[in-house]
Length: 253
Image (cartoon, rainbow, N blue to C red; front, side, top):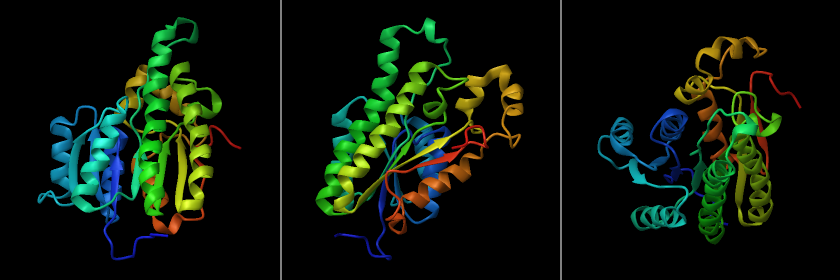
């Protein structure tokens, strides 16, 4: 089993890494010593600025265009990483779309569109990178789920909640099938975090939302990002198929 040696620099690919919570994940992984590939459907100046923040020399911070709706994009990024560094050790499936909309108002086409991006993108990433990890005998997959996928959502649409529930199930399936090959697959299900996306979704209802959180505050995205990093570590070998809840006590199980 090709478990990386402590002195080896590992490579982590993060989808939706150019902004919001994805940016915090990239920072956390880089602080922990990973090379970080910041991917996004439209990396633009934000991804470039983040890569420069992580490493001005461009050796351990790299940007790439990746539309999670396109399997060929996943394969291209993987191939480029292997060509440049020889392998990839970590995939973080973070990219997602969300809209706040009443269930009776959701157009079926929009429902399928959100499912395809969020759950379909996670499936594709797990499958394509999972093959690489299986061949190498080592890998870590961390899927970003959500409290909405556990409790049906309160401030998000049914399409988003359903997609995150599907991600939780996919996590279990890939965890089971890849475990014999030194590959783990886990999910993190955050409640509302203090991110631009959450603030945009909640809008003027944000104070009421915070009042309904038992601990009385939004989640710290930097802390949740550190959870991603911990699950990406070789030391996390005995954690597999799990969903780590971090929701301020909104949903207790």
